[in-house]
Amino acid sequence: MKLSQLAAGLVLGFGIAGAAMAQTVMKINISTAQNSHQGVAIDTFAKEVAARTNGRYKVETFYNGSLGGERESIEAVQLGTQALTFSSSGPVPNFVPESKILDVPFLFRDKAHARAVLDGPIGQDLLSKFDSKGFKALAWAENGFRHMTNSKREVHAPGDLKGLKMRTMENPVHIAAYKQFGIVTTPMAFPEVFTALQQGTVDGQENPLSVIISAKFDQVQKYLSLTGHVYSPCILLMNKAEYDKLSADDKKAFLEAAKVAVKANRDRVDADDDKGVAYLREKGMDVTTDVDKSKFVAALTPVEAQFEKQFGKENLDRIRNYKAQ
Image (cartoon, rainbow, N blue to C red; front, side, top):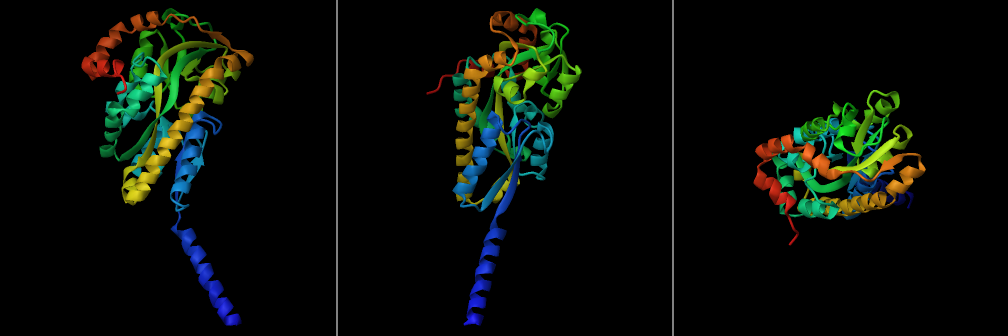
């Protein structure tokens, strides 16, 4: 009896060990805090992947740039040293140049317009461009509309930005546009930004309210201007070889998990936008809402011609005039 019990125990033990060994662990990371719109996205994604694959895939989540900045993380996914990452669009054009078009200032009317473009044929076609670069782009998500903060003065019009040293993303479209505003552009990985602002290495930065809140930039910035100058997508990327190894059912599970994560992400952006201004004012920020956007658009006239030449006026107009069917 004891031998049979021992044998049964060994069989059970080997079965449990086999199940444990069958689990595949993947890492995903963000540059922002866990309590952020990006944190909500990857936490939701990890939970959904586990549920939809019955625990055969476990996604480990990392925050605050603990695995590196966005560009480093995208490189790691491309090389296959990391399975997944969730990034703003900032450094993405360095890997997939076709995505640059989404970063053109004042391209989108509002979030509904931007989401319709990204979820529709234009956005889905752009996702397919990642395949040849070593990625499987699972979904477009969201940062939101970007606004300016600084420690020097209120900003109502482009002239108020002249000479301000501003951290920018490592994004050529943004840099070209911001120079037209008179900004002294300083490309910098996101994990370095708070300290740079704190030490006065740069005067300001630009980000959506969700990022400004989660990064606690109110502690190191006095002035916020609701410029809404660029809509900032995020993207959920997976190493292409890792994705290709998945079964058809598991591929579907990862894609469906990404959709649920995107909804959670966008809901959080909406919530942050709704409460953000009041919250940041309570934290002591001086918030300028009467921004003359027409002057910002006019200031970009020289670089707009450059964008039309680079991307094609018809492609820009296709996005600007897009209406969901």
